[in-house]
Length: 524
Image 1 (cartoon, rainbow, N blue to C red):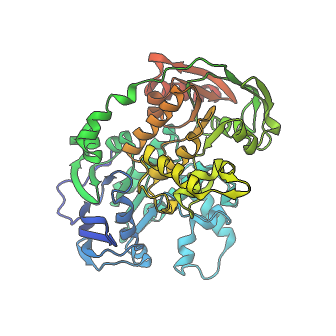
Image 2: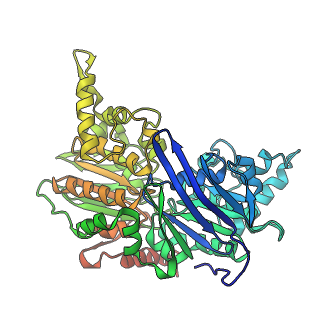
Image 3: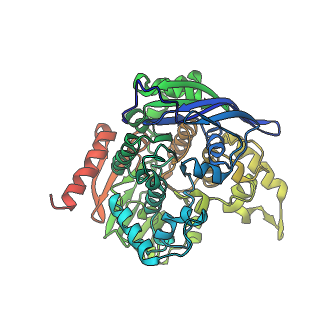
């Protein structure tokens, strides 16, 4: 946890009071006040749609509030801000979409803000790449600064975004170093074993006098690494706590309401009962990382897949969906043996296989079209009769799915891009679950969703398993794996090296097994 500047008479780094933002009849922020101190990591909690993202956009100068005031280091700052004002005030942001440009190099992404503000008249490319290499080395990120960003993995892209945000603070002069770094779900793409290194970096930043505003849904991160926490619910502040005085149960009650929290507390530990049907399995599955992997897929089972970054555990899902170039091996399903090399997403869907990818915005949904259109995509052909599309049938099916999966807003015509992350994920799940897939492939299924949506999603997955489907969950969230799955396969050195189940399948056991395999692979 960061060391706070207790006893200091210095004004708050950033203080916001009475901030209100309305969109027509919808109130996104309702008289919100928050105080972020220098030398502290301040957590911001709340369900998707509670107002967190809007508050961050006010700080970034993207959204202008209808009411409210703000001071920075005791000096009043007029609202609304412009983005250039936020930059000059020393506000740095890592948003959920990372804000990177895929088509340019890593180095150009790292120093993009300098170009935007006109601080670079003539680009000295040699120095640019040299400075980027030094910066990446300092934070132990092993990527080539000359590589196009689009060639990097999601993890590496997130690391670049975080370094880009914090580097100006870490390298700042004493005069300007008391800046604010706003991190919106910064560990979404980071495996659990790599999260500690990022927080060590944040501790260094706040030790120099900066402040950090951290948005996260991971309670362990918040309790272990923050000094103060503010909780939003229904667009209002419902609690401010010193973290060392708070408990996870108390915070969950504040986020979702005590009544809902009590009702759901026992449901999460109910394991699905495997149905009795034929068994599917992978044989000799190989990808760029995996080597002759075999894995049983028992009906009714929820099989977790995890390992260290680079172990390739997530590649199993994309190979099973026919979306992994160069994959080889066999998949036995419903009495048929399929050549993975010839498998395509269309063939996989025809076989009853569904995939929920980690990057839902780019790979899982069509953001610009409606909830209804997204829900109908996998089964669109069934809504044609005599070559004519039946919109009423689509509407009836969509209305039922919106209700069954508690999708908000409950308007099938709403553009998907207007939904919160949790509700977008429910749409992705619902479009596959409506046809009860034989095999459902989930990659980081509750990444970036709030506590309530997380529990809802787990419930939907359990219901599917109880009907006899097989579920594969590739995740770096050990709590999710230990709570949701019937077994967890640890992947290292291109294969499954151990499988945990029963009482031995705990968060600590999963973490320890991944770490032990890391040491083994390094020869220590």
